[in-house]
Length: 402
Image (tube, rainbow, N blue to C red; front, side, top):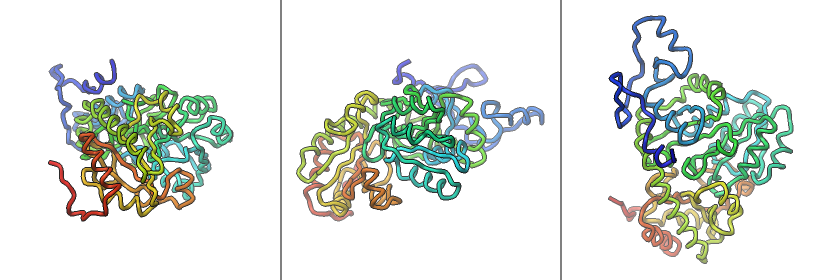
């Protein structure tokens, strides 16, 4: 089936009567009862048997895992409590002290932070690469302790699209497990497993749920044996998904393809408009001609995504001022919801990085990140242009949309 159809037809379990509920039931139970001790003991053997305790498995959570497996074209999935829970769970399950990780230089700030913590506390060596050249990865990975390659389909917030086919092929040839964060693209724009990735991670908080009302994460595996290696650590960490959060995510997934079309169309229109604005020195959008990843994005992504960033001539202060001037867009840290959000990465999501690290990641002091929503395109254009040209406003005057 095409992805549009898969998104609508959630993978659900039949009732004992043999009929299927059209909506996935919310099973808000922490534990499940058995008739015999032997049956309970047998159910404790792994993640795919009868339900025992919702930290180990839950019907609603399993429906989400099976649905995401289908959307990404994987062999299995694990749902987590958050996107960082998914990233941390995978890294902690697969790394040991002294291992080496090769990571794309421009990654989400939280991923930078957890890699830095692993380096400091456990002696994990982290080698940064641009993500543009498989030969650069091979030079960094030719080491007996290299275990993981960490990439993002669309880098947050610069819009860089790494050479997924080349890098993933090189990782597989060297026996290095590859992890790709696909949160910004979603399975609608890219399915990294089809390019050779071993693990795809998501913050399901973002486009998958899509309504700014849930916190969640997931990892989808190309090989089920790899899932079985990670699952015990998920149970030990307690980073499992909550059934209600899984249920909310399942409510959002059927409209994912429709929402992504609007996100991408609005972002592309704004990127083109901003590219000609005198107060903007650079626009970062992967499907905008002139972007460093433009040619590659055309091959890897079906559209440019809903995340847009741009640099303002006035630097850090201009960036901060802009995010306080918008009226339709809101100043908030997240992304991927139906409403447009703006933030200033240098002082928020990437505040862990010093000026040198920010520059290395391609994040200018005046960079503004905008998660473009599904509002009317003209309303967004007017809002952005007034924020670029008007004096700072009183936050109390912010337009509230009904």
